[in-house]
Image 1: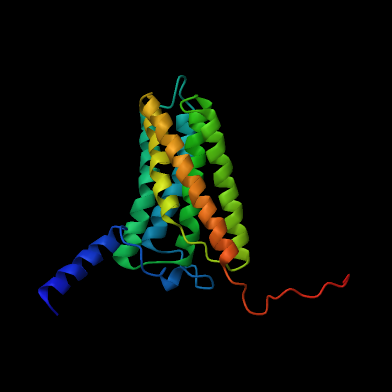
Image 2: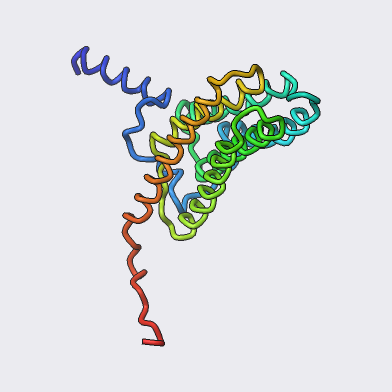
Length: 220
């Protein structure tokens, strides 16, 4: 193996480790029908993120004119955990079916809880917060339908990128007021809507499993 090939392989390994290159197939352990494997290091991060959401809500809503800074810090920790659990899964190889189901649920709950706090204190445009909340709920419902039908819904790049401006806008709005966070939230909303369009397209294009052909109707 040439030195260049080794360097290219090492660079590709780093890109995959840090989540930059996601061109390969999803790990087998995350596919439908695989064991849940709840007791992994990445899932521990997911459980801690989920447990932190009600703590964040209680502390954030205890403020009079806005959420306290320590509540915003907790939100940042929960949001940053979205990257941490994925990094740990790639670094340790501890992929799991539960992790693939838990991560998007925690992400949705994080955005909804942060959006509610920003709505309560009027920190960001309420129309954009309402649109994001509706989109998140519909995404969860669509994921439930897809899981029941055995259709794998892969997170696309629009969805991956959208999380950053949305969570960042929510966090920074709790720290200092600026129209920059309004624009960032709207950008995240646009990207999230594009992601939803791609999810629906992929769902409609997915081939029906064998034996799922339409049964003749008794009313025909």
